[in-house]
Image 1 (cartoon, one colour):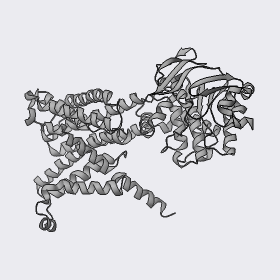
Image 2 (image 1 turned 90 degrees about the horizontal axis):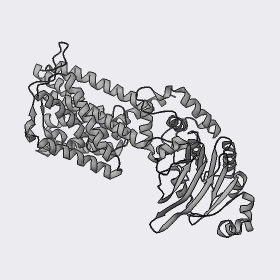
Image 3 (image 1 turned 45 degrees about the horizontal axis):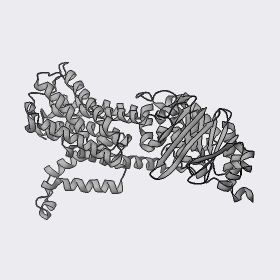
Image 4 (image 1 turned 120 degrees about the vertical axis):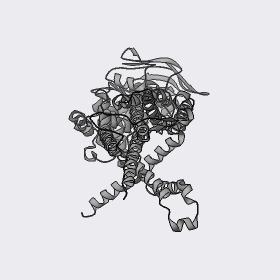
Amino acid sequence: MQATDQLFYVSFASRVMIYALAATSLNLVLGYGGMVSFGHAAFVGAGAYAASILMAEGVTSAWIAWPAAVAAAALLAWGIGAISLRTRGVYFIMITLAFAQMMFYLVNSMKAYGGDEGLSLPRRAEIGFGLDLGSEVVFYYAVLCILASMVFLLYRLINSRFGRVIVAIRENEARAEAIGLPVFRYQLACFVIAGAAGGLAGALLASHGKYVNPGVLHWAQSGTLMIMVILGGVGRLWGGVIGAAVLLCLEHLIADYPLGWLERLAPNYQQHGNLGVGLVLLAIVLFAPQGIAGLLSRRKAEAKRAPA
Amino acid sequence: MLRLEHLCKRFGGVVATDDVTLEVAAGEVHALIGPNGAGKTTLIGQICGGLAPDHGDVFFENRKITKIPQHARIAAGLARSYQITSIFRSFSVLDNLALAVQARTGSSFSFWKPVAKEKMIFDEALSVLEEIGLQEKKNHLASTLAHGEQRALEVGLALATQPKLVLLDEPMAGMGPEESSRMIELISRVRSRAAVLLVEHDMDAVFRLADRISVLVDGRLITTDVPEKIKLNEEVRRAYLGDELAA
């Protein structure tokens, strides 16, 4: 493999992990909390834009930009959540979508920061300690550390008092309230935590590409994150990570590795890569409703039972 | 302990609760009987929260609770069980009860410490488990329990919050005679710790447990009295007990 090829794959792996983080944060609200938020891109976008605007204004330190991105996303999630969580079911889906689209049009109109053309950044954020995030390898390890800590945080969270409550509310909201749990408060807290983590993913995403545009807030992004969660496993610890990896690799394979026999059959199939993704998603929903993570853990359970 | 004052609730044209004034004393088992559709469950909803009355007030320990949310009423010492079983089906039996204990014992805004390590929660959950007689099903998923066991867990969830007054909405619905008598035993043990407002169609159970009985017909409270007097009350016989007692 050529050196440039290797760098491409290191960078690609970073991108996968950033999406894994975003999908994992969505999995907290969607999978564990049972809140079908269709506006998660708004929080990723808020983080991406907060970090990018700071960079454009000359703040280059990640230690300022990333916490600021987290705070901006958390604040936005608090506002959107406080209103949206008064609705249920399809109304909740629609209202979160509507808020996210409002944010999409808002950044589109921010002419000072690129408007619909987006904002190019001179460099990636700086973390000091003599480490240069401009290097793909250093950036890769930084993202790996962040993703690993966030998955570990999620693991602790879902086994904590808070995690039990969140899952219980998903299970039976009326009963949760009737044993004395203030459902709204817990749901809002969950929504804010997930939004904040999404904001961190956004900041990383902007740093990674040294570029941010309104597309990061588009509803299709929310949809992509949702597809990742469903592919990987709704309410599964590794669901977001697996889903992001599978989806992005699949897209990459379809786009960059033409299959001769398929091309003869359907000459333009690579331009319709989403069809392939759709078919995989269909298969997952039909045959593995617990996602790939569910499939794997079922395998493991069966293997354990087999020798007995 | 609990006082309802001129409670009214309508759903469209249907008057579900019609000017109900009622008092439940500390330590008593107060039965609420009445034909189907009399508004018993609606009344429980208004006492426990979840349903807001159109008029009237609910007082609990002399504090007006008409406007406070359901979770705060539970924290104040009310608890309810549901007529249609409402449990956490994908949780184990023990986890169901542990969750209710957890809800009572402080905030759940704790994000780091594993709940499994909080021995106090599980000790208390185990003692409720024993009380409702499901020790052997401790680690079974709630959804796999038999109907009668789920009903016991339903009541257990209410008891695990250590209420001062527990509202039981037809705890014996769909139970066999053996399960019913176990439930009667459980309720008679509970009364030493908490007042009970019991909605029940099983007249046998009602007359064995209740200190006083209130009769609700078409949303209206027609009388409240001791069981002996209720048995003899003409109006009650006509409205509800009818053939059952006349026979």
